[in-house]
Amino acid sequence: MSNKCDLSKEEKVQVICRLLSQAPPGEFYSVFEDLCILVQDDDLMRQEAAQVCAHYNKNNFTSVRIEGTNVLVTRYNDLGGSRFFDPKNKFSFKFDHLSGISSKFQLHSVAWDEAELWRIALSSALKAYVDSHFPSGDCNVFKKTLKNSHIFVACISGHQYTPLGFWNGLWRGKWIFSQIPVITQVTGTINLQLHYFKDANLHMTACKTVEETLHVIDPAQLAIDFVKLIETEDNKFHLAMLENFQALTDEIWRKTLRRQLPVTRTIINWNKLLTNQSMKILKLKKF
Image (cartoon, rainbow, N blue to C red; front, side, top):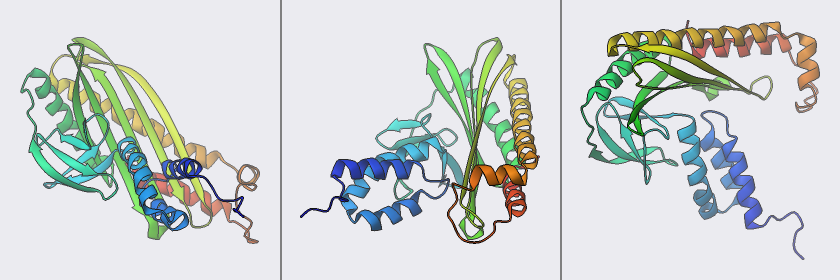
């Protein structure tokens, strides 16, 4: 007699993909290993996890260390076939999403035109900003061509993965604009994810979208103005998150979370939990 609790292969695939895609920042491989133990089908796990992991890495701007330089894995430098482009060193590499290993390096030709000079200026200014404002942060500026127009995409990833400290956090920023003379429209998105699992199991996500304009006159001035815009919007978002935490009362936390938390027969110190969460946000980014 078959067990009614047994899942079909299709149902297993759906559950596996859903759980993997919901993995908190820096915890994908831990979730993958736990699922391997539960599913006990390594071939199925690796087959399904490969695609989910590729999407997960690109969506979270996973950082890869290559030749002394950190390169972000995103859909904006995806060449297909698990190959990605390093805009600084001008080569491509094969990236195994499950193992995190890069290999098969090749030179990747880039046209040294005016747009590339603008990209280099933007990249240099952005790196200086990230180095001074994120304890552990990386960034890349990518150049794309769309209908004879040059599009710049700036990606920022600031993370703190400290499982021994019972928390992981990820700050992502994405900024897109065209190289249009005089004035260009800038569209930005800031994402924050936190997972705290010491006194409780809490996963927080927040997102902000930005639309602003910048004057496009010369590379140096655009780079300065662009970084000022990012710094202003990042700090607004940072302060708003801290103020929201401080505005929460003990009563609100109890009403909102008490039915979602497991029964442990212990009293949760909400004030301590609130303080700890605020400290995690502070550690992800410096003013």
